[in-house]
Amino acid sequence: MKFPRSHLALIGILSFGLCSFVIAKFNTDPNQDRFSNETVLLEIAEPDAEAHKLIGAPEELPPLPIVETKPKNNWRAVNTEVKPGDNLSTIFKRLNLSPRETYLVSQSKQFGPRLKNIFPGHKMELKINDNNQLMALTYSTGPLDTLEYVRQGDQFVSKQITPEPDRVLAYRHGTIDHSLFVASQRAGLPDSLTMRLAQIFQWDVDFVLDIRPGDSFYVAYEELYLENEFIGYGDILAAEFINQGEQFRAIQYVNADGSSDYYAPNGESMRKAFLRAPVNFSRISSNFNLRRVHPLWKTVRPHRGIDYAAPSGTPILAAGDGRVVRASRTEANGNYIVVQHGEQFVTKYLHLSKFAKGVKRGAKVNQGQTIGYVGATGWATAPHLHYEFLVNGVHKNPRTVSLPDAQPVGQSEMQRFRARTVEYSKLLDNYKNQISVAAAR
Ligand SMILES: [Zn+2]
Image (tube, rainbow, N blue to C red; front, top):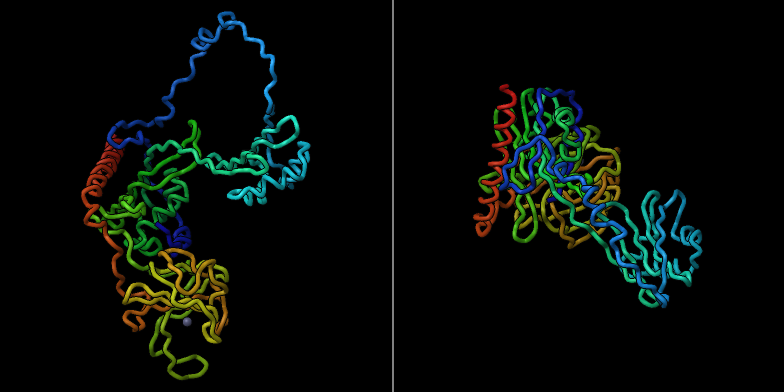
């Protein structure tokens, strides 16, 4: 799912606090109700030094056979790190590799171009033979991304190696004094996941206007580990937000076609088919008003959209899934985009500084996808997005028009969806139980 960014910058504006939080982690296997305050990974035993000694006692080994023939392709492995100011040529030069080697490996079909942008701190391993020829190169940009280049004659074949990390289910709970972000931080939830939490519930909760002291949340999410080392956060799998006593629950579900989205336990999408505002705005500079008297011309000139003031360059998001029917320029509109959503709906975006890559007539866009950037082209005096929302060809106020729901879970998936919902609702319930038991002590 693509996440719109509207409103989110505003979430952090208010000041905050937190009543209580509890941290706990489960084994990833949701059927295994192991509740513990320790992470599961910590249970892995230390290697037993004594046992190793017994196995590896050198006097028990048979004598090594004497190897007479030297292998034809003898090579050595060199480990190095990209230093500030380095490029591939400077690194290869340091290792006495010829410019031809640099050329050949960077010409590698699939991932050769990636070697034109290498970054300080990233690790490289090279295999170099006795003729100072590069046999293989691996370049790691992080624990989950390693590129491998292997010599085949006068060419290099490249591929990407992405190890599958271990996923550990983790839980957080926070109670809000004034703002979600401070509550989340005190609960140990990273900002990136707080953003996602707010994105999931953005259609039900206005995180600027609706938040009240005492609102609370429960989140189940994944932490990723590689060889027992924490490397990052995965997805939110299930979450509950309680706003002014009203409870909202969302479960992540991966559809048969591989797309994933968040749904209420009854199968309805947490999303609407359209974002309310397709830009992260600082203020509304002109409202929808069909009887507006123009301040200069003193005549009735309807304003058929909303003007969202935002700095030049702010991303503009497609309000819903659809197809670009116009990405063009006129004297009045400046750069503008028109998107058709099914039969009934059209959205328009005016005064853009530029279009996003690939956005042109006929292009398919998804909700939340960046389609362009705020500007002041055309008849505009300051950077803003002029946004229009049309239903069956009639302009509606984008702030108040009732938005259709996004697609619910398909009938053919309902059985699998229910199984997952029951499972994850139970996990959240257990977690909430543990917290209330702990609070009662
Ligand atoms: Zn306008």
